[in-house]
Length: 250
Image 1 (cartoon, rainbow, N blue to C red):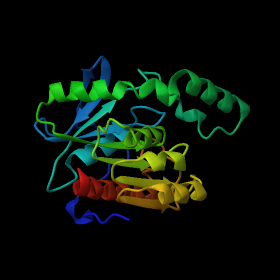
Image 2: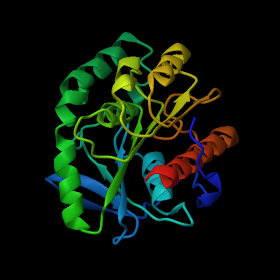
Image 3: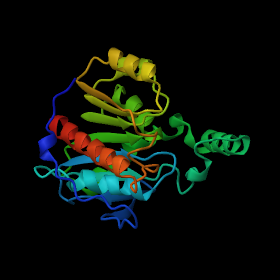
């Protein structure tokens, strides 16, 4: 279990509806990318969204990460891996055959991780051309992006200094064996507790693993119900934990 500084963080008030992004969209390595945070920051975070793409709750999360640490600011990059073709949130949860079919078809065509992993190095290089001050990277991944973060944390070509997964998809303890950098996992009640605990057991690096027992899959991204006070509080707590972790290791 890691020990990290949560006192660093005074995140801005969470906006329940009608969130207005603080950043801008740029083309990086031919990929539309949401960029937020100080343009001269020497620390950056790659934010890998969930299958629903650019969603207000996830964009707001990127803005929180950029400026929520009173001692340290980050430049956050969120690329559009799906090139304007995310899954529809109406398909989730896939409670009937039609939704299952649509979600399955989308995943085969757009969501398989090996299709997107090779893009990451080029995106980081393009970000560094955009901001030559960048010296170190962290990564946060939501749901689908959590799996990306897990895989990249175990890459032989280490690109990141710290990795965070929230509501990670397809938790696999075999990934944990390969992880080479400090790792945080903030799981929801809908991930398998057995899989999460086995993942934790197999980690050989500094880590913080926590299950948000009352929260649904996606509680820090597109499916966050910010109108619900408890869900909103847990969304905020997730970002405070994330900022504390990045401050400790990035």
